[in-house]
Length: 231
Image 1: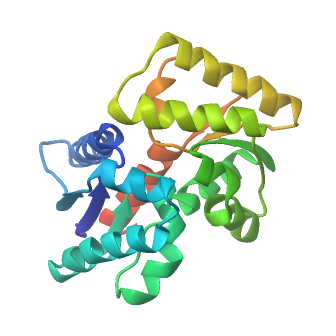
Image 2: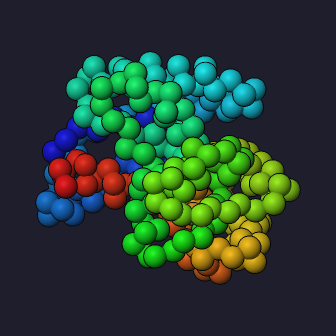
């Protein structure tokens, strides 16, 4: 099995889910308690959030680069960012490393293509919804049109992610708000919705939604498992 470096902590809530799924799926694959070779580094979420709010993405990139280089030196064969938003700095990081990041947008794009959807909604942090590190890659590499909710909805979703979801608080009112956001995207012509923050699938687990969902965390784990197993 190939060795993987996981860079988590943004948030720890969804990082646990990466760890759980990867171990469970490898157990299932081998039919016993075989575990994958994983190295996990836990970032300081508070520090990263403060830098995001200040627009200090170069500083964020340098923090992640230091961790990525350390994991590379330990012998991992690929790197994972256990969240959507940090992928904003992958284009800065990748040329400075000799091993690949397994990009979450590739995982999302492959899942969307399997279903034949061409126009999808996206819910995530304000950075993920407004910038092109996910949307642009899906458009360029997979010819998928991505739409996002109105600015007011984006701002409220950002607040809920930062204040509640990132620390594992999944209130009923928050769940309702996200469900209502689906209707806004449906009215704009979305065929499905990307859950583009790795805490959103945890919030909406076993919850009926008005559109099909693309679980970015689950898709990412599929891509990682294929790499671990050399597929």
